[in-house]
Image 1 (cartoon, rainbow, N blue to C red):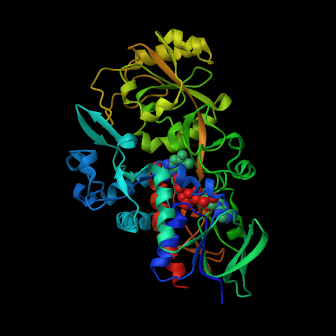
Image 2 (image 1 turned 90 degrees about the vertical axis):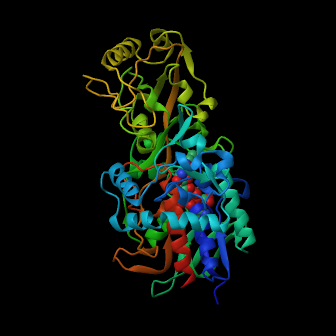
Image 3 (image 1 turned 90 degrees about the horizontal axis):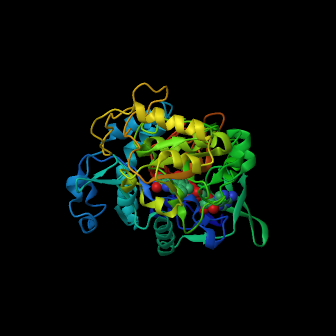
Length: 489
Ligand SMILES: Cc1cc2nc3c(=O)[nH]c(=O)nc-3n(C[C@H](O)[C@H](O)[C@H](O)COP(=O)(O)OP(=O)(O)OC[C@H]3O[C@@H](n4cnc5c(N)ncnc54)[C@H](O)[C@@H]3O)c2cc1C
């Protein structure tokens, strides 16, 4: 008789959703294995902004999720635009350049609203993501499409709520217990997990195993191997524990590698951010208001269309593009017309300021002559029109080889400020192939009996880029599926 019905490896959002789903579907003995210490538990989920992207047809569909939201935003329901499944699908296909897996992405899209209802029913409290997604124009809040709700107290709150729910549901958590291998019988069925804990090595038998232990973003050797240079030098935005263990174990057990193994989610962060995520600062080192400014590298040149799209559709690829610049650095330059629009988290930064753009360039460690030329060329290329941060306003530069396609205003209102940024890695896109029940597929394209996966370990959904808020949503959707399937083993 196995010790456990279901072993869940990892203690982030995906794993916790799997554990709660397994309990709900009747699994009696469910354990969560967490490699981290209790003080460092919760994976990237703890560091996240807690934002969930999901499809909904009417603003009123959000009411059951946030019944008290009008206390937070009095006219909330009149400010929210619907985000139907077609819009979510179009966003996901556009930013992944059509490469998202058709089967898995339809599961993510189609189950997103129902799953967010489910996590709320589990006891995860949601709130309006005001500081993350809202822009106030003429006194009225406007939201970035589909990015409306987050967990209360962001990732810190989400992670804490999941652990509280686990305690209420009788789910055991074993800290400092890293899975090192999968146990398999002669027929290939996964029958448990080999672990290393404070006592040493031991084997934990189970009816089914769910892997929800993240990607390989915190493993410099794998980053160098799969992502190449300069990723071995990247700062990690979140946990130091996601070192690809689950992917290694699954592949050793015959799992099919899937998705973009050279791809990852990475964002512009404060150049002085620590090498791994800071438990208190969490995602506050992000610097995502670049659509309102001008971005130059150390050569004093622009290298990215800052106004290509809303930040939630470009930020997850921009980190890598910055990391590829000389020194892995860039500078976001703003004038006082737009500093009011900068996300609140810019307050954690230390901008360099000057009264003229020329003087500002002189203070930055960039090629001063080229930097001044770049800004002069930009100023000469902006056209007149109405600036509107709530829509793609078409206020584009004219005649530049590298345009700024929206929100291109002159830098003309001192003092001017520059924020130094680098690229921080969030999570990797390569994973294993799962089916519609979150069963891990073998290289023979048949399910490996007893083995399930969810969260960052799922390959195929994200390529090149991703729409903000999809990581937690995917973790919840496939975690819930994995847990329910595992309970049925
Ligand atoms: C700064 C930051 C901000 C973000 N903001 C958002 C956001 O607002 N919205 C959004 O959708 N996404 C966001 N993300 C991405 C999101 O956090 C991840 O997609 C999501 O948390 C992944 O969930 P997961 O459960 O798969 O992995 P994780 O939450 O990383 O959990 C992995 C778990 O596995 C454990 N583990 C690893 N190896 C082992 C092992 N061998 N044995 C046992 N345990 C192991 C880890 O310790 C951890 O508990 C953000 C990420 C970061 C870093």
